[in-house]
Length: 246
Image (tube, rainbow, N blue to C red; front, side):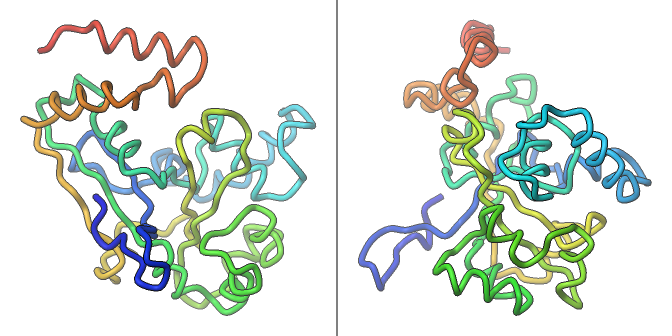
């Protein structure tokens, strides 16, 4: 999980990878919006508009579309954003948290966000250069595109941006979270990645190792109690912790 993490210039280990753990190796990299069905691309603006209309007026920090998308994704609205983490251990948690899938292989996707950003349109790469940053914030992305329509028109081919969400609560902070967002709601991240095989790798977690990995992550305090602070996360952790092996 830490391959290619050595930074020769810094003389330190500084991974430029984002990680996403899936409980089944066969799962595709689909957004929650894409899972709505064949008309999902047309539903995006309607669902986000109504979310903004009915949400509390102070729900989003600022009024940019990127802030609202981050808040909406965080609270479960289907969006074109996809959840990632800087932590390979947290990705491993999500790959092994569902004990009902312990008879199936899991997978952890690992994408080099710094290399992916070398393929960005000039307007977006210029924002990163000006800030001396490797990933975007909602404010930085807002400088380049104020709407989703403007965002899609920035390039003549599909591209992906990695975005750090605002620290809305302890859950986002503890999960060391970031999002990916494709230039088009209908774009397939899977297909895009396969055009650039040097940007990513995938680690398969064999079903027979899941219990061992799960127990060791629990010992390392990588649990629902930490990643979902509050009574809900505590209950999820205890339920799994006391479930019989089956």
